[in-house]
Structure formats: structure tokens, C-alpha cells
Amino acid sequence: MTASTIDESCTLVIFGASGDLTRRKLLPALWSMFQSRVLPEPFAVVGVSRSEMTNEQFRTRMREAIADFARVQPPSTRVWERFAQALFYYAGDPADGGMYAGLSAYLKQVEQERGTGANRLFYVSTPPSVYSPLVTRLGEAGLNRPPENTNGWVRIIIEKPFGRDLVSAGALNQVVASVFHEDQVYRIDHYLGKETVQNILVFRWANGIFEPLWNRNHVDHVQITVGEAIGVEGRGAYYEESGALRDMIQNHILQLLCLVAMEPPVTFDSDPVRDEKTKVMRAIRPIAADEVDRVAVRGQYGPGFVEGQRVPGYREEKGVSAESITETFAALRLEIENWRWAGVPFYLRTGKRLPKRASEIAVQFKQTPHLVFRRNPEILTEPNRLVLRIQPDEGMSLSFGAKLPGSELRIKPVEMEFDYGQAFGGEPPEAYERLLLDAMKGDATLYARGDWVMMAWELLQPVLSGWAAGDPRKFPNYEAGTWGPAEADTLIERSGRRWRRP
Image (tube, rainbow, N blue to C red; front, side):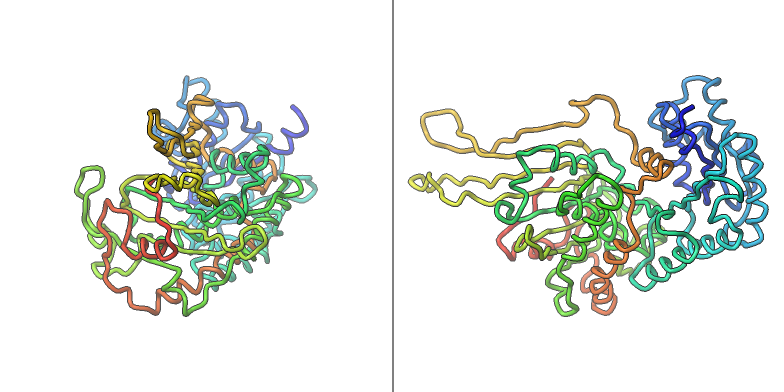
């Protein structure tokens, strides 16, 4: 066993182990890593939640979850048994301070049995209301540091949402900072673990042809779209407390914006990369209270048709108030006031019950400075556009004008396509596979830093406050199966541009 493997071997403690995230994402990711031989061994997983379960019951549940959701399916009973022997369960309420002394003793027992050493990775997958008391209790029990007389490490992964506004995020940051050092804290955003999101950086900095064009001299504007065809999928009660701006823009979409707009880091290490993303946030023009209606649009879907099926409106969903003013669609116009991007608007939008599932970044370049075909006024050349598709159909396309065959001069936009699956084959690893492995290695490059989170909330707080104080006007204001409210079109058409239809 190599020294690096020993350093990465750990006991993963999942708070909220009976929840949906553990079943759908965390254990399937660990199983796929194990099957792919990238999971550091020896390892142990200790699930913690209030439900009463034995180790064997927990293992049975996790095998069912892996059969339903894992990228790699169990090939044989023998291989599964080897993995299952690393799964343990401890029943207890994470909000109960009396539980942690028993948990501490149990972890030592598991570590001795499995030979994992003193490395511990805590994963907080509980309701957000439990985050602060859980972190506090870990500190009180001394679980924020390795056991005495060991060379181990302790790290903590905290799921989103990290706060629900500027004040609550600041309070949570303060609690976390009082218990853990910043280099122990991993604020997870699963979007950053997607292969195609990481490919944005490779595309920009591993190819000399594009970076010289990546600035205000050549780019007209950038559109970032994260659209979903589904509704709230039985999570109406959660979504009522969240909404599209908090759920998607504050984390996922602003992270994508930073990857597109950031300067090249000195090295591709954690601090330099996150420093550059923070610089982007610092450069975004603040949103004044009196301009919220001009740069931000909200919407809520009503009944309609998606993929040929009639679907209910948001207010008809389970757990949703019949008079709800929660937005299921949000769009923003942002400007980055620095040398590279001055004058280039960034348009962000996300919504539920749109015509299709599509996450993409569209970089539209400027028109040619001189139209040499002016003797043919009927010729309209489309501007070049680079589209980075995150999901589904991961890949990218570059559009340019080409002459149609024939005696007449006619121009048609054509596309050069790159398809991730066709080029490399197979199914790419799930985002949680990469992110869990990085946390075990101590690489925080793809995790959000505390100052970045606070800047994101600071940017959006005027919008949240303005929407809370203002009249939501007519909700619902877009039909399910359409691309959002008419006001979103006005937002971008005001400057002579239009939304791309993925």
C-alpha cells in the first residue's frame, strides 16, 4: 500500500444516512468508486440518523439503493460482500448533544476493526436547520480534530443550501469557523463535479485558439441556462422555502459564470483557482435596490403541457400553498466590471416545467465589423456562437456561416459538433464520485470557499429583498412547457438580443 493511499483512507461519517441523498447519490458513488478501484482502501462508512437500524439492515437498504441508482451494478455476491463489510450504522439524533460521546467511541471501534487509521470525513446531509447545532456538537465532543496521539485528519462536507440569505449564511459561516479551520471545510456544489463543467477550464486553457477570443473585444454576450422539464417532484414543501433564485442561481449558475469569466490561475491548485473565482464575484456590478425590476425577472408556472403530457401548475403541487408567491423561474442580467469583460452582459436563467431539460453556456461572438456581402441585402449572417452543453447530450458546438451549394450566393449557419459520449465512450463518472474522492485527498479546488458563498449572497440579497417587499403581480405568469414569462424575453430584447432555444 502506498503512502498516498494510506493518507486518503478514511472513515466517512454520513449524517442523515436514511435520507434520499445517501440512497440516490452518496452510496452509489462510493460503490462505483470501489468497483473502479479508485476508492482508497481500507475504508469505512458509518451512517448516522434517527432511524433504528442494525448494520445488516443498513447494508441491505444500501444494496437496494445501489441496484436502483448506481452507475456500476453489483457483479457478484462475493464482491458486494467485501464492500458491504465496510458499511456500519449508528442510530442517533444529530441535534442531540448526548449522542456524540457514543458516536466517538463507536468510530474508534470501527477504525480499529477496519484499519482505516484516524482519518475522518464527516458528511452533513441533514435538513439545513440541523447544520449549526450539528457542527457545534462536533466541536463540543472534540470530533473536529483527530484523536489524540495520531497523525490523522478531520474534514467536513456541508451540503447546500449554505444559508438562505446573507444574514443566515453569515451566521452559519460564523458557527462553522468557530469549530473548524477553513481548510477542513468542504462546501459541496455537485455541479462542479460534472465532467463537462470541468471541461470548461480545459477547453479554455488547454487550447491556444480560443483564449485570445475570450474577452470584450470578441464576445457580444453570454447566456447561461439551466432548465428543467420536471416540476417540484413531491418536494413542494422544500421548494416553498427556497425558490429558483436560491435553489439554482446562488450556487450552481454563479459557479458556472465564474468558470467562464475567471482569469487563468497561476496553477490548477485549490487556492489559486478559488482566488480567481472570488475575483470574478468581486467584479460583478452590485444590484441597486431601485434597479431590481430592470435586471431581474421572476416567474411561476401554471398548468400546461410538457412533452405532450398535461401537467399541473405549481400551486396545484403537493405541499404548495394555493396562493404561493414562490418563483419557479428566475432570470438575471449581470455585468462584470473588469478589463476582460467590461460591457459584456451575462444573462442567467433557470426554471422548472420548461420545454426540455437543458443546461448550457452559450458564448455569442460579435458580428463581423464589415459586411462584404452588402450587395446582397437579403443575406443575413448569423453571429458565431459557441455552446457548451453540460446536460444532457454533454458536449459543445461551434456555429459559423457557410455558403450553400449553387449558383446564388446564399449563406447558412452550420455547426461543428463535439459529443462527449461519442468521443470517449462509456458513461462518465457521477459528480459525487469526483467530489468525494477529492475531499478524501484534501483537494478543495471544486468546492466553494466561505468568502465566495458570502459574496454570492451579497450579490443576490437586493433581489431577494426586493421580491419579498414587492407585489408578485400575476402568478402564475408562464405556462408549463414554455420558456418562461414574457418579461424574461423583454429583459434580453431590451438590448437587441434574444434568448437561445436549446
